[in-house]
Image (cartoon, rainbow, N blue to C red):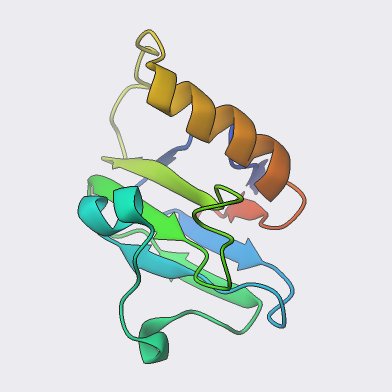
Length: 124
């Protein structure tokens, strides 16, 4: 098992599990698309993960976007993040130069969310 905190490299492998640990009275988690991510808009409330201990198996290679849908956590507190899921055997990517947007999301979100959402990668 390897602990992975949001704000590190946010790269996972097919077969990993994304684990959210948070206070469900103050947070929830929505998986959204890129447009919803940028706008901090959310699907219907019944689509929220809200147990406080949610596990998402990562089964396909893709980019995934997650946001907190409680109050103004997404827009005002930047409680949102992006992960990249690579093939199980893909080599680790080299890090491209940071864009301003990525730097803001990574640094602000990494500091704020590291205390709220822990992600663990569990290898099968």
